[in-house]
Image 1: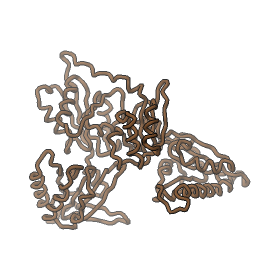
Image 2: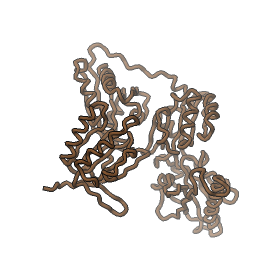
Image 3: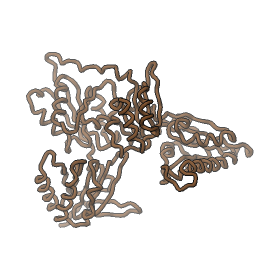
Image 4: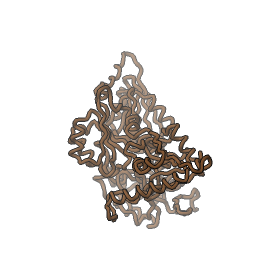
Length: 511
């Protein structure tokens, strides 16, 4: 639609369009139609220029529309503006309003995109207040983040006479705790830098163990976890804390049916979830997860699986692999369909070997065990860098929890002398910091100092970072428990394509 074509004297209309929580398929039919018809598409963005709202709306853009990026001048309260942070933001909103008013006065319809719902902690409201008296304004509601988080958890927000309380994380922890204490159910938004204070408030209110963390709900970068287990340094602004309905929580989950005499053993599948989101989990693994009665695994890995009230989850600590395997086999032996989950591939430093070792017991003779492969972390990191594992390579773990450092050192040296590229898992943890430096120095005895090293951190996750350095420049302080290292062979090369640098190891090896 083009207002100028139909009436040169008419002013345009301002549409505040809610896009929902991030999944383009959760954009309403009305919102999609208006986006496609608009003369001007406006959206807020950070100073780096990326706009989440625009990325969600992109499937519905025509391609020939005028775009108005509204770039925030500041993202924190640190500014040199004489009016301080509020003065800088007020000036920014006033300028944006006049930019949109110029289009509206010329008869152009403007769609201002916003994540979630325009009137639910949305940026649109600042334009609405400044323009609604001058031009026709239409607000198109969207699915908000609280509803999306509840859906992803599979837990109702409120039932019967319960009252849902929505709170900003910017409240002081004591005030937030006071309000949480009296809440039947609650959602706390605006996390990011406020996260530690929010978690403190849940703890003071005595409900930390009941609270959930949901990040970027409904998107491919979604993360769901118990609030108490989340690393504050990993929390973006687009996340929330949820205390769902207690009524549902009080409904006891059904106990597994007892095994009747003469029943056949159940089935157990050890499944690789891949290194990150659902898009990196194979259809075969997803089918096994959907069919399971019981899901067994390390707590954070289980949180990656969408809740299903039919299923029972059995979370455990990451250091009890043998006990976890036996628990899963006992469930299967009782006639249940059981899935044990691993990150990445279950056969690579994961639960595949632990389950098969435990299954070598007469008690589990009737239990069928399948191992379903998954995309490995090494493959994921390699794909982000190019093809550094394009020829023969070695996979090893730097963790000395289950084998001695002497064994690790001997294998590292052998791989280096054989001129194999290396994929090094578990390079560091909070309590184990010296192995990266020791491995680097050992490799430098056998390999050139300019050998490419790929540092992949949280690949596929919200804090993904991939860096390429020379072996001699590998700084152990840049490596933590969420990293995987790829070390090239003597033939591994760097190639520049425009502004991008790729790492690859040729298929041919020098004679």
